[in-house]
Length: 194
Image (cartoon, rainbow, N blue to C red):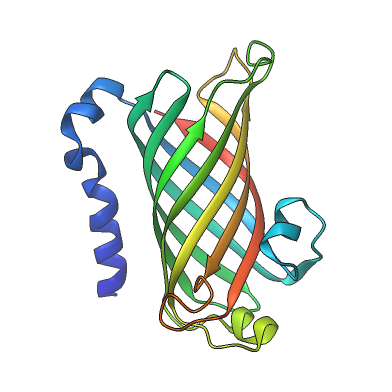
């Protein structure tokens, strides 16, 4: 219970951490997505050639805050996530990450598009059985977190986006807690900017 309260507290800190930027941009978002684990490596998952393991599914709620912009082409964001694994494993997962989002695409007048890369930490409330099952390697509840995302919005409705995500946890080849295990998932969801 105290872990959940801590994560909610951390999510609540985002605007006060960067008060000037938060007031200037007023760009916050809420993303909800469902995901399915894959049996492939990160590269296979990223190009959608990995097999899905439908036995392992989860849902994630993410809250983000824009904290800066570079040349009107790249946004920088802080994001916190709470994920609940619904089948195959049943633990909670808490992720905190820094996101860089590329905004400049030539077709944005027709279909507003962004590509994002996020890097941070992931804490599971127990050692994920998926990582033990597929990697047969040492894993850990605390691992590195990597996110890849492509989002699409209609120019007439810029507050709403369709989001597809790659959700990746790993020990970075043993760098974090000596963990070699990793997991990948493909997610699909929606985002609302407020």
